[in-house]
Image (cartoon, rainbow, N blue to C red; front, top):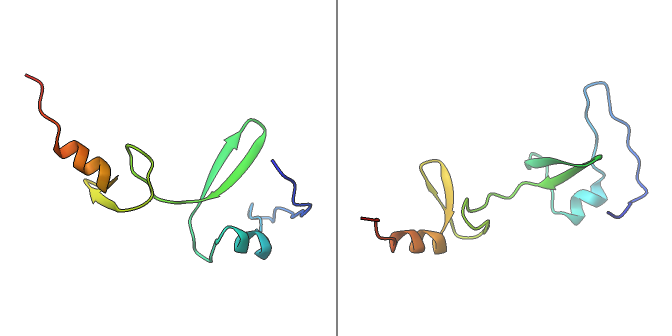
Length: 84
C-alpha cells in the first residue's frame, strides 16, 4: 500500500473526508457508493462497481431476479442442458 501523506481526523459522527485529489484520481463523485473492506489491520475504501455474480465482469450487465449477470455468462447459461 502506498501512503499519500494526507491525514484526516474522524469527526464526532465517524465520518472521514476523502480529499478531492484522491476523489478525482479514482473518479469518485458526490453520492457515489463506496465499498469498505478490512484487510488485517487496514481499512480499504473502494469505489463500488456492480459486477456479474459469476465472473466479476463490470460491462454489459443485466438484472435477473435482483442479481447482475453479464452478457457472456447469460449466453453460457442459456446453453446449459439439465442433468438426467
